[in-house]
Image 1 (cartoon, rainbow, N blue to C red):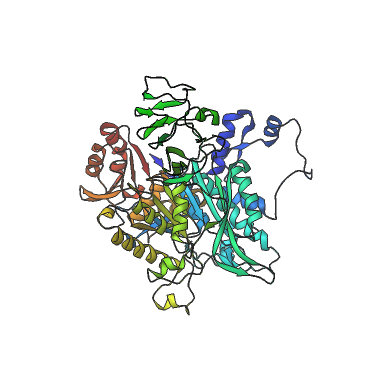
Image 2 (image 1 turned 60 degrees about the vertical axis):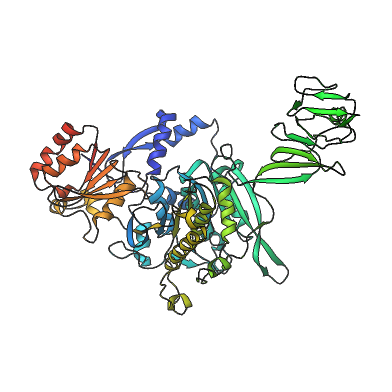
Length: 640
């Protein structure tokens, strides 16, 4: 049986395979750090394949760089053995919800999610630290190795458990003021890009302090051609300096592939006066009032079958109309599209509607004011993203109504809901890995309640920052920022359901809480060659880990979404987990015998996973493969 790797997606290995497909002559073999053969890139040959002239070191070129940028890139590509542990007691509707709330350092969380959610997230919204001189930024230290840093910083204990928040205050007096912020944001955006669907988009809130640097980073990671917009956003409150009053900030919008994205915004009907033109060349319905004087049209009854004098190529008669004394006897409707004002003059005097002006949306109807014969245009319009002055109203009022007012300047629910509505539809996944007060989760639930079949799913990621013991929230029992945010989602979901009534019976306002932690496996699982022979027979699962902990790490390893449906049943006296019905069946109990294995094999799952130490005796191991070969030969059997 194959052994599960139990670590995050190997980006470098994946990229090596891609290069091998394009340029097989550029891939060679070498001995790795563990002394085993591994594939590697021959960069001299690869350079020769890509260019006749190699850019030499020090040669002038267009680039954006800063100290430790290479280390930031490497950090994004480095896999992690960390995992996510479920926490049922802090969750809401754990067994049925499709939403996730994840506590932990967002870089490690993104790496853990990368393989499972690769190309599955439709939209990302983040509100990262603005680097104002008072913000905290993640302390990704590149001056020493990652393991050395974790030991010396006190960030993790001997078991790999997080002991303090990996944050530092980035003041303007810091000689690496911009460098530290860039090293923080770059690897997170690089990993996040992998999670986006081909038609996915990312929205990033930022202000003047780092907007220029952020746009350069995004253009490098996503491609300058994939910049959708740099939106000016009205702030809910002004920020005054000695010289200016700042009333706005920005929202930077990039696409994974701008050729693939499309608007999914709310449809609106508008009525306006003016000239007529239709961007998609559809023929609108035009209503002309009774008594309208006609021009060059003889008296008589006109239908589709009877030609009217003049140009008829753009006219379709919907209802017959009667002309008496050069006037319309009854109101009439036509489908028409005029290419020039002369076309219309041939039919209706003094009512010229040229098509020079391009109108956004689809014209549904054109009718005339009965007294002044002024053309009114009724059209359906899909909401678009304004590049200037998008309003972010006071988000504090949203949480005041929930009795949770512990946040400074939270984004408003209406603002985030509008952004989410532009590019997502039912069942799309929305990710926020700087989730803070969880406005994004609130906005997704609110939007789902207001749209038919709204089943968008959210993934919130937030570092469990400790609260000041002197603050009001701490006095009310909240220990970390995550504690407040989870309570906000609970209260917001309850309020949304109450307001929506019966229409929200099936609305998903629950969430599964997951917490980042060290691997469930002991070090011997990953590097058996570094341990003595006797140690190899020791238990390879940490003593404090549950069967459900193991199940979720297996789901991550097999690329199964963490929101998948999970059931548990007793089979031959053993607890067996079923994920997405029979897609994954797992048993981590001890003393599993042939009876349990046989009953599971008869179910013919796609995957079956068990612990190496679960077998009751050696006979179970010996007969394991034969049992599955007989009852379910197509099942992928794995062990941990």
